[in-house]
Image (cartoon, rainbow, N blue to C red; front, side, top):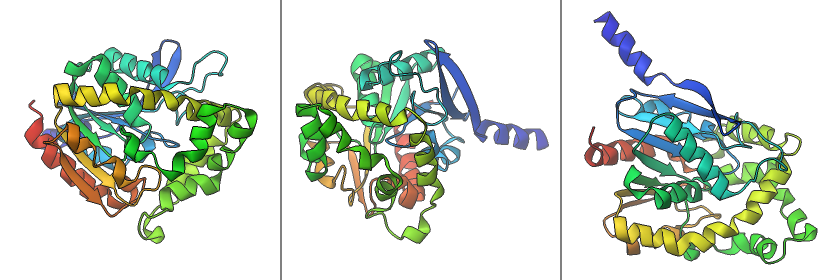
Length: 298
């Protein structure tokens, strides 16, 4: 009996690992039995796999959970911009190579914010590998790009230093705090550790320019929207949409169009903001467990 308890604890305990992927050290969190159905958690900006710190243990009893940090984020290496192209296509390639290195051949994807363009690139390249989608404030439709995106659109149209510099306030502690706190419920119920940690990573020398490069490259994600939507229509991946409806970055107007292409998707608009896991984490975990339990087969 004691050995069974120890084995269960071992399976669900989070492990903190690093793998070398094409010369870059990529950090990832891993938990659950290696032979269980895989769930890959893809973080947003300006976060890291730390945003899943509470979700991973809730999933690990049933699933093999993997949550990487992209290069330039979290505990992963931050190669110089001269040696590494900070584009969403390249980040997706790194995640793809990591999963192949770990022997993870099929997986459900949790995509949030930047995790959506990274994850959807994986799906476009290898649609048969994706067993399900959990979509949390991850955009794939023009309807989801509203007022917030005006200064980014100016950068995409004219990548001048002036337009680049206009986005620097979003790299500050005030900008990071706003992403977590804005319209996300009782501020006293949110741990400031989340945004303080993110800001510590953003404040590393050279990281601001990396993030500005990615802001500019975000335009390539919008260009892929028609292909992503065609993937939804053609393959009809099982999908759970858990969306913070009060998000000013990716508002609920970006959630609703998913149902055009994925009419069988399960949608829940939550009374939360951009980082909905911070305020609605237990609710999201419960909905995921129910959804994955009837969707994935061991």
